[in-house]
Structures are given as C-alpha cells and as structure tokens.
Length: 209
Image (cartoon, rainbow, N blue to C red; front, side):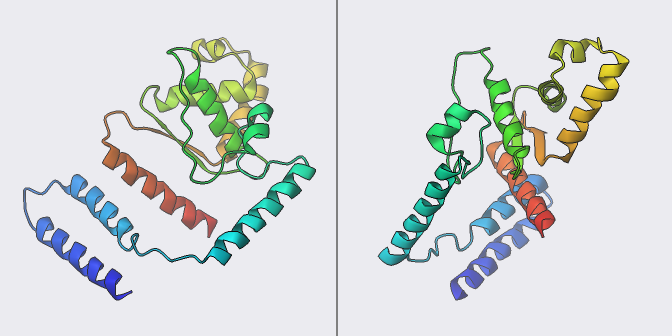
C-alpha cells in the first residue's frame, strides 16, 4: 500500500509540473495520465499457492461438466453452435483473431459475434470499434441482421410502411435495449483507443452498481 501511495505521489507530481506549461498537449497528456494511474500497482501481484490453483481448476471443471450435461454454454456465446461446441463460448482474457481474404464478410461475422453476445439470455456488454465502416453503416448492418430486412432495402429506402412499423421498429427497439456500443476510431492513436476503452469500462461499472 505504501508503494502504491508513493507511485501516486510520483506520477501526479510529474503531471502537475507538465500541466502548468502553456505548450502542453492537453488531450495527449490526459490520456497518458489515465494510462499511468491505471497501471499503478499492477506489478504488485498476489502470490497464489498450489492449493489455490488446484481449487480453482476443480471449481471451473465442475462448472464445465454441469454446463455440458445441461447443453448450455458456460462462457460468452458466439451464436454459432459449431463454434460454441468447440470452445464452450468465448472465455475471459481470450484474444480471438478473425482473419480472411478481403471482402468475404469478416465485418459482418464479427458484428454477428458482437450482436449475439449482447443479445444472449445473459447479455454481455460489447464495445465494437471500427476503423473501416462508419458507426451509421454498422448500425444499418445490425438492423438488417435483427429485422431480416435486406441491407440494400434499408440503404435505398425501399421499405414498405408495414415493414417500417413492424420489423424495423421492433429490431431497433431490441438493439437499443442491448448493451452494444459502436465507436468509430478512424484516425485515433492506440493510446487514444485505450483511453476510450477505459472510459467505457468506467461507465459500465457505474451502471452495474
């Protein structure tokens, strides 16, 4: 605890001096400050005993066995049964890379993964960051998926009043209730992207309280 206190004093002292400079890049400085504060004490890691590792493994295994018997997904569902059968759903701390040739539907598939997780029976918050399509384009894709109205029809406005009032309105309402957030990060540095993610984390933690 004393180490963390000293680190807070050191980091804040450095940034106080920088903040007084008229030439300071305010937004870049804010992002660096957030990053520095969030990493304070991260190297202070609790040591786990072999017994703790073993107990956690047994507990996790029992949960998997129970889920398998009842045909349920233990982790975050992808929405694709064949994938979920192999992985038992997306697990915490996993990094999943979706790779394929250009123009074969990577964005649509990734958006489907996000939609399925956010609209599962036990929904998981999803932050979808895009460097290609704009937020409005992605939202159109989401509405098309949920309403089963062709994307071309939505883009051109070739939609009947009945379709507008029923399928599309219901789809928009369902998406609006789901914890899925879309952000356009074109032109942002990775440091700015990390700061954006941290802000979303704070918002979601506050809402859960």
